[in-house]
Image (cartoon, rainbow over all chains, first blue to last red; front, side, top):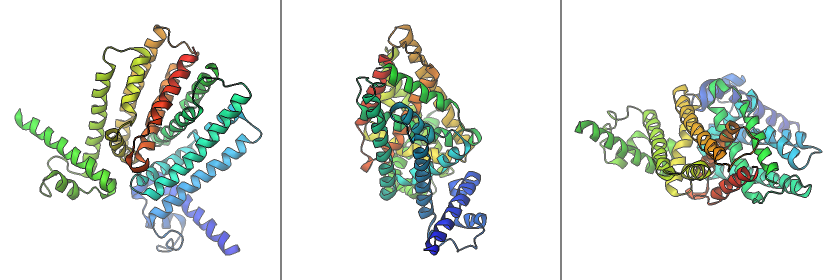
Length: 198
Length: 198
């Protein structure tokens, strides 16, 4: 089905153009016209791919989420328990400029999701998936004895997930889109507490 | 200076009207006209108070921050160390519908701040203030012996602050603006780890 593959590729080209425009002009300055020009499309040629800026933003959010999950699969391969949890968190944290740019997509998506139940559901389902992953790593860590703290794993997972979300805000609002290396220290401090409480 | 007081009161009336409109229509649906109508102002009568929606949003964010800080002062009065830290966090977490509504103001403010250095600075300064407060509570907890974990307090404070930010996202995107009581359990789990690691 070469036509479908081609459509997918063009969608990704548009998403890449959208990153660049949003990084330069912000979500509100990122008009469909600006995005078309950036991607080398004729004005109006975006419509078959994304009828509205809203559909483009939802696709871009899904793309960030999927891409992050691909990276997570790679870095957690062959790991379990705390090493897997650490690798997972490091991939989600905005520790380089690519992921700072992703944060700049995700925050506007959240803002839209406040009054768009469909988008809010996409967000919640993504978070449920990550919550389940974290719970799995914690279960492995309890099984191998590295974690034995008397805390509810679901609460720990929810706490950590919120920290990972908050880090996106800090990154998106950081000076000049710089990654904050302090985030890695924050993660280490938390993992130290998690292990030490055992 | 009765005139100034009156102006301040009218600004707060407008902020209250803005909450209600944003809760109902979202930030993008909250036009100056809708806000004027909701507050019982003639259309155009907002201009002397807030020349643009942007200035209104910035004022609303500042108001949420100040109001939260007033509540923090009340609940932490006479407390120190971990009890003060816990009271602080409970006030910041969106644990009731009023604070869920505040989260619905704060997320759009963050989104605007991504491409507005002035707003990003307001956010960062607010966070620096809270970071310093958390560091103070941790120093007290180390002095009274309840915390002795071998972790960097600044990293712990940054971690906790990011969790508090992330909780605003979860609340703003939660089903029907409901507060999530699980947030209190997340905080308890973290404080348990913090004390147990000592």
